[in-house]
Amino acid sequence: MEINNQELINTALSVIEIESASVRKLADRIDDNFIKACRLLICSKKSVVITGVGKSAHIGKKIAATMTSTGTPAIFMHAVEALHGDLGITPAGSAVIAISYSGETEEILKLIPTFKRFAIPIVSITGNPNSALAQQANINLNVHVEKEACPNGLAPTASTTASLAMGDALAMCLLQAKGFSERDFATFHPGGSLGKKLLTTVKDIMHQHDELPMVVKDTSIEEALSEMSQKNLGMTTIVDSISNKKVIGIFTDGDIRRTLASNINIETEMITKVMSNKFIYVTGKTSTSEAINLMEKYKIYCFPVLDDKGSLIGAFSMHDLISARLV
Image (tube, rainbow, N blue to C red):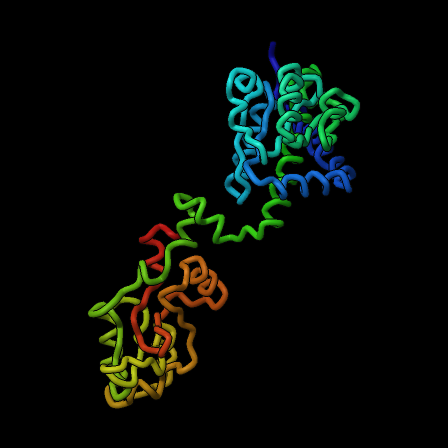
């Protein structure tokens, strides 16, 4: 069978429209029942156990992964395997999310007596509020869709998307209820770019000791320019004295252009005449994520790093962030 390009486009657009419409209709079902489901899961003393069969199993795995990475311990348990021993991962104190669009999945229904025996509450996600699963669950979340996006009306498409969206809504509400922060997210994602930015501090990448661009206050502009050229960080700091390294100003590449345009004698004039005594700095504990935000906000691409007393302990630039693959 041949299909032309326009037919492919029309099919794709139809799928997106049907699935997006199915998700939009869920908004009308975010009600007291949804709140009760959130409260039930928040009160779970153990893990949230998510179960399903077929395509619902794949959706359940994704919801479990999302919850686990956002502060809610969760695990997926295949309903078939649960009937053959895996029920051991649902101890008392757990809560169950059972996903079945028909609400009549035999393997899931066979698990319900065991859940009830151990007083494990059940939140069902079904497309039929009158189904056996919905009726036996403590709370049912209705994800009914008018039709699937499959041209034959057979392959689970809109229904699985709706189930996933409902699961994501639960996960994000639990995240908020638990006060799960951006830094918490980074802790659980140390290998990701966000985790690396949040967990890596300025101290980890900054230049120190002999690499620091630094001159004392009675240094000439010419000598300061030489220091900048040698250290190659796009700036130099001006300190009160070598002993205490208390920073009283900075001089950057941008200041060079302004200085040369003013016809100042760089051999005789002191750097204090042209330095900026109001400047942005960071501490060694500052996350590189925060440093990047400061760079974007103030359009500054190099920073001095100061300790609690205002003394210079390091310096870094955008190039250091790039070298560390943080941007």
